[in-house]
Amino acid sequence: MSIWELFIIAVGLSMDAFAVSICKGLSVQRLRPRHALLTGLWFGGFQALMPALGFALGVRFQAFITSVDHWIAFVLLGLIGLNMLREARGQDDGDAMSDSFSARAMLPLAVATSIDALAVGVTFAFLRVNIVPAVCFIGVTTFALSCAGVKVGNVFGEKYKARAEYFGGAVLILMGTKILLEHLGILG
Image 1 (cartoon, helix red, strand yellow):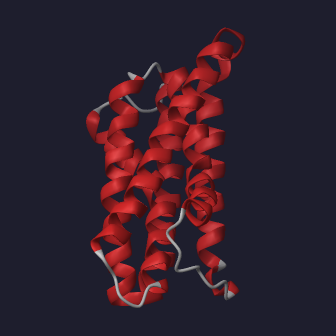
Image 2: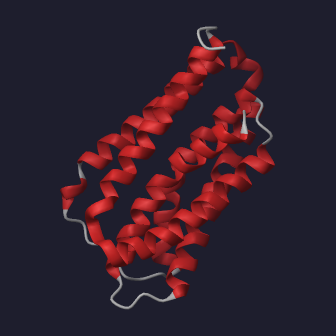
């Protein structure tokens, strides 16, 4: 997997965290640098941890499913992307985001926004991706976008949240399709 492909996946995975970061930015009256830093650390940390866990699971069971690994990658990335698109359409649910940045408030958000990264980690095992640089890259990308998302949310509001999730979902669907087409010999 090229650095460009990894970057695209990292940005796609980061879009859930970016969208939630925008909401966190909306929730605070007076934004402080520690708000962005805490959000970036929680989301970036979990976006790095989850693919590592998924990779470990994928490696463990790789021998059983290597003949269908490209289909698994296609289905997992496609489902994650479709779910992100579905969530982006349902943004008018009226849920209010807590203005707390405590562990109790941030842990469930970090886990929820990184579940898709777990599945991507499983996919990485099948694609034989060098996992340490990959998870570091995903974590740093998510950290940066989450920090920016808090600021964007505080300044611009709800306007960009759905667009971020649409973009992330589309990117993951396209990456899954590319993996499948390469394995089938349609793309060189």
